[in-house]
Image (tube, rainbow, N blue to C red):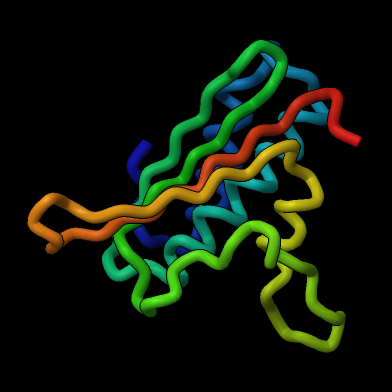
Length: 134
């Protein structure tokens, strides 16, 4: 699904996960996927250079897979490596999303690239959530 920069984008992402997964995955897995979708699209809009982000929700057996793809970042670092995703101290005003995603996910894959002409950059985060999560 294509998402545009709007105040309710997190809610739209959560609703899309619910609609796609209802009755097809465990409620606990769906709740984690709703959280992940909301965090990923919110971060994508906060850090991407244009106003369009895409989100794909799929099922792999009993697992829910959420992929969010956005245009290249507005800073050269892009998405930090997954092993650096931490929850900061409570005194930090923001920055908890990626660390929390890492806690609820079974696997996270970060991918990035650019068009053959080097003009268009993109980045994607794919998160897998299963009922066997510890």
